[in-house]
Length: 245
Image (cartoon, rainbow, N blue to C red):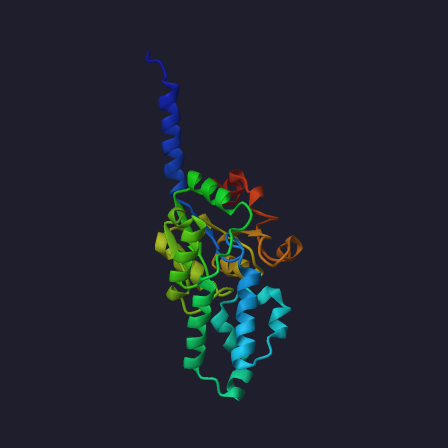
């Protein structure tokens, strides 16, 4: 009778766990979830709109639930009448957005509380990871590199790949197809009701984290499966329970 090797058994168990968890996908939003940029980035955007287009931004400034909507889409969603009345052309908006993105990229926004520790915890247990954001890919790459997080994500998906931003589910549907995994095996971390709606409409599990501009009570009003005050509260067992592992 052969003696069992505890070390060998442990390695085999770890291998089995890795194979099992390769069937799952864990996503993170960027602004507000991993990077503390929601307030600063939005204030910068609204100030530029006020100055360059003289459009009244007060309503959106005071409704933080819409701050997660892609900046460029706001012109058509909320200021369509003003844009038409002032004769603002699409080319002018595109030029404005290029300048806004360049200006935002120059700001070294810090990581949100415990962001790096949470991502490192995830990659120790899950093979497939993605950053899914309403920013353009070059902005995602730059921001994640500055935060020291780029190496942890197998894929990054931004607005370059979709026509509609969150709360439309298109961006999450896209990332699921990239990995070729069933939606029931996918989960994301989001700091906004807009992001949570996008994920849930795409069929993902969603964990809300109150590190953006919406509070725990705000996020509990959404369809988030779990709401955390910050990423220090994350436990791997939460993900296992949600994904049925």
